[in-house]
Image (cartoon, rainbow, N blue to C red; front, side):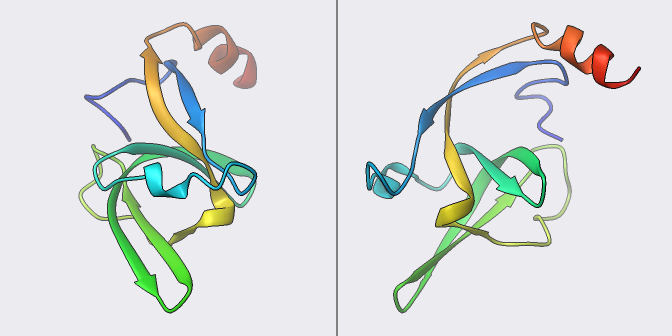
Length: 99
């Protein structure tokens, strides 16, 4: 869902974002972020940040998707900001998971 930015089988290196470092202010609109939703790790582009009282909600979308994601991401869901993309190196893992 992130084509053409990167394809399936790509590996990303992230800058860790979390409560320990209190570095959530590094997350900016347009960044590609990694986050947890249910039992999956998702990598999508941040398209909007909404602050309501003391809470912050992050809205994301896959570059290849027509609509924004049907959920909001909260601070506790965020893993980090994508800094490096390495194409194709993850294909062995993809193949093994499909066996």
